[in-house]
Image (tube, rainbow, N blue to C red; front, side, top):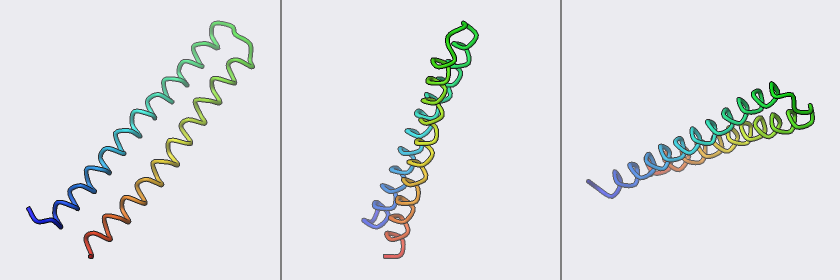
Length: 84
């Protein structure tokens, strides 16, 4: 395998690893959202429910934004390596 192919393969592995991290953090956000719904059925105060729900939504938004930024940067780096 040439050095050029090795660099491209390395970039692809970085993108796969970033995707796995995104999936794990997204799953945590979904789990936290489901937990907030369950906590609401227990009769906790609206503040507690809203706090947990807001953290879940914030985590998901942050996860998506960071993932998109990561994919854009990784794709740009990959394209630079391909057309080098």
